[in-house]
Image (tube, rainbow, N blue to C red; front, side, top):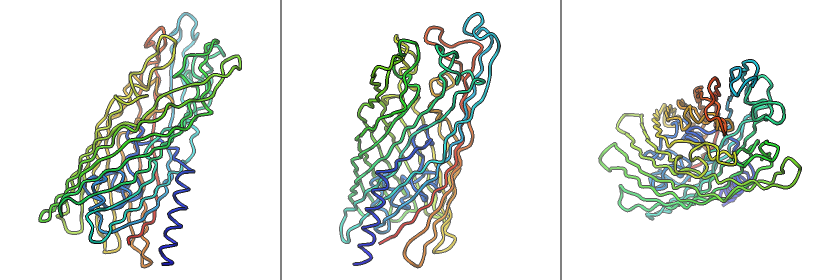
Length: 441
């Protein structure tokens, strides 16, 4: 009884932590995190058909929690470190005679700190019941940059009325947290289905706020104060584990996560109050997974996902409207594939490796509009382990590296269009260290 009370208090404490500290992250597949928790991360996110832990199962396939070997409670913490830089070049006279008088070029690194991403999950399997219940709370995505004004980097020079030609300092912070109360029902000994309504919390800050029309002096307003928003969606999934075959199959669909409009308090160039507004949802994700358990000590999982950015509010076609506001990020929908392998070193020690490839949602044509959100990493490697301890608690760790990628395109102007003799390039690499504990009961 005392042990149950301690577990309940731990659960409450971590739930409060989750609500109070969302992720400030530069996500993997565009702005969608590729994995949740150390076990799922060590498999590079593969797990739609191979439920190895509560976090990964709840996040990728609600039907698969019926495939867990027992009830489980887990907590994790990710230290996420993006390495982001922004380069630009403008040839002499690119914007007209004497604008600029000489070719300018420069590169600036974002001053982005290591970001914390907490996560928790609990799954309960009542004895002699076909039902399995769970609750997850974790960061699912985001982006963030912090570029200072740089007189040597054209895109980071002050805005035109202030003596430059760029945006000035660029700052963005987009944090996404999801809670997923989940139920799974075992239709047959081999086949389960699951459903989860999803409740989301997010916060957004962007400056300069180019999604609004410029002020009367031509500068874009400041959106650094930010706004919080709540969103809703759902997830459904099915999981199949054949009784006399080493193959597993999984299929899940996470709907668009529909958020309230972000409304940011700002001011115009005369100091008068101005409210800024933007709609920014989370894309729907279709996941198909297959797993193989036929090798001694080895389990292999592979997932394919379709992430529908193109039809998501906020990510629609990029460009300038008649008032000079940017219409969207202009991301395309992408395919992603993840493969992970688990090797049982012993009955108490498991090591895993994983690889993810995803298309970049940002094309060279859209790079200029994505200076605050260059989610362009395409290749990711992960590794990690789980150690089962005598105390009943299990320790898991993982490391992830997103390999550096660069996307370059032209500078876009509201009246000139794509400007010849110019270029804007974003470069991104990522590192993540994940640690967690779990207990089966």
